[in-house]
Length: 379
Ligand SMILES: [Zn+2]
Ligand SMILES: [Zn+2]
Image (cartoon, rainbow, N blue to C red; front, side, top):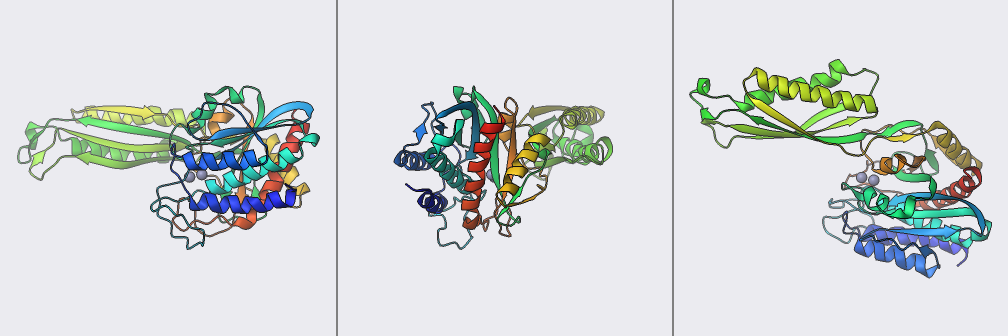
């Protein structure tokens, strides 16, 4: 198929994907659809044992490095309220993070690169990653041997509020390390009328909730973005009994590895110290999530150059304390994460989120050029 027709297909693919969202680890129909579209254009699919998601490959006819492009394919448990003619056909499910946009773009990129493989000096692997919204999606790809020879990786994400035709590229940490914690407080239950005979875990927990906010305000550098949120508290089951124990959980978001470590230590000291001072005991359980997404300056400079050469606009990324498991690839492979202006007024994960389809073709053209130039530059 000619390039113009392939580009028209990107819009059709995007609308199909938008109408047919699937949750993390359940992207069976999505995977099937991607496979069919790639097979129609004779794009190679690498044989790796993935339940959902897949990896395609375009091997150029000339020798050169291997680079990777990564998109994610899963949707969210949100009831769509966008009013689009191609809204979700599945009640309670929606592509509200633009992963349908990413997938359609990478399908287009794979097909266009395949059409021009005579000119390619190296190999491009296109990763259709499952389950970005749930823990572990990136590991499904990392556990396969598919990245072993990859020298460089690019990731993309929709950016609502940034106009179509603008690519937002910033160096440094652009998305946060996302950690989760649980706190269990053990006191002594008693009659509500005899508090002197017990140790009230609710009072201990209240003190902990108040104190952990001082980590950000008193222990962190005020110029660093950090966050501690306690998002759930459970204790007791009636009005006239002081309960024996309580449970809390929450999240810590950081852009800097040292801040991340320091918050964990401080949280542990506060939780244990406060509990002890009330005669109670507490346990902190820490679940480390993906680290921060960090873009090296030279890669950003290069990505901006390519965009400008195509006549696109470039802008800065607004840093976010949201997380993104693209950082797991960056632990072993140099890579950068680029935001694509997709217009609209609602943020990602909003029921009325819209990624403007006008942004599809310019993004495909940009990523194709970025991939070609990466092969020339990162030999
Ligand atoms: Zn998301
Ligand atoms: Zn997303």
